[in-house]
Image 1 (cartoon, rainbow, N blue to C red):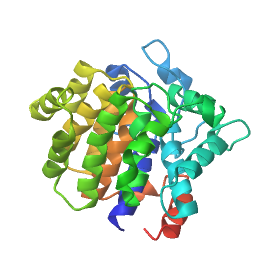
Image 2 (cartoon, rainbow, N blue to C red):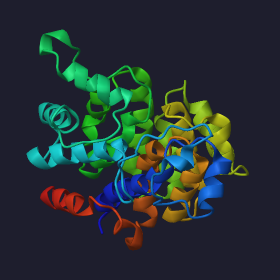
Image 3 (cartoon, rainbow, N blue to C red):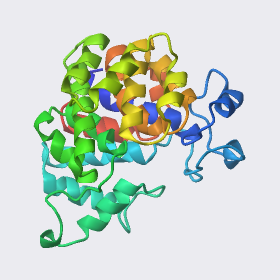
Image 4 (cartoon, one colour):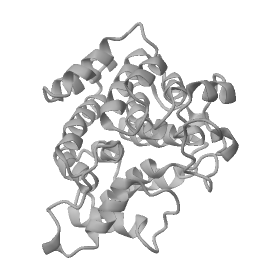
Length: 302
């Protein structure tokens, strides 16, 4: 399997593996429910009752992906349609999939909701990019598809299509630097260092601090810095996890056990861990959209 395939499948498999306990903010409850194997758990309201949580996926089945994975698939479809990144095609594909009458059925996050509203405006009534003023993890969810396809020069446009603000761009450039290094065959230490090197001065200290916390578990670190959807919480957790986990399965499990927005973190985490460590076949076989992904990657000759 090529690095491009490992990157996209790594992201989507990690997302699907995390879905059952996504947005459950009580690490003790997660450990009690799932033990050491929290992956691919069915989504049930009972698991979320009585603890800080948000039960967002009542209609999903084991092997489905979250709205984060859907964002990655949308860009992959747009790339496959034109062979390279085209802003108009990406926006049209996004609106057709997530908007009224589209194929997507499920939770619509703030970035997606506001992007759809802006896309519905005439070109004279919106900014260059339709994205929301949103500093959360949807900003980086589509990047595994973009970087796998070698469309590195369009990173900022892709980020701002859904998250049109400087904070999202800053963290998105960190994420893309790591993805590029992974795709190009770097070691995990070099991959994370590439992200640190790309970080603006305002956000680098927190990222560096997370990377330096080698004696702290990813679960403890994530609880300390924040388990929610903000990029400023997710990126440090991801970088720490990548540096400490010995393989793909360990990284994804630690991410789920860390709680909160596990699916949001899973996209970047799984993409990089998938390239470096490989995506286990017995996990990728559980991904419902695997055939679609392989067909799109084949069309892109990846």
